Length: 130
Image (cartoon, rainbow, N blue to C red; front, side, top):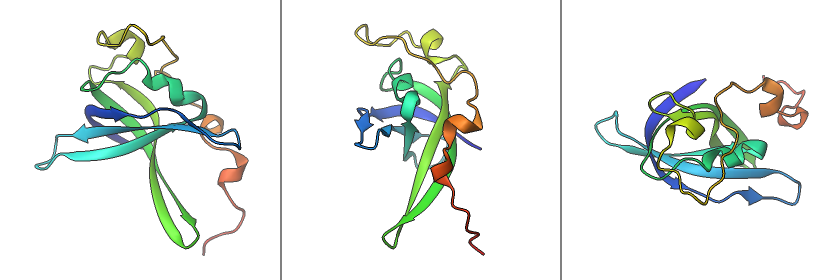
């Protein structure tokens, strides 16, 4: 488990795929280093609407896992967010007074998800890499 904090710089639209999988990406600009970094995170499946209550420029704290995979000889790394909250520790529904009026309230990441919510049987192969 990893954590990062910063300001929301960009929130993308939900992307849906023919397989039924959906994801939503967002960028957080960290400021704790000498040089601020723009980090792209993603949420998947039923967690996509949880970004709705947040607005650009809002300070947030992200809990995430680092996920990596190989596809056609190329390697990819994703920062898979499983919890997002206002930097004051509030959930998005409670802490975001800057949420646009046209967005509806959605479930937050306030409670930690179960491992079965994050991973499916297809995420792992039975082969050992050693």
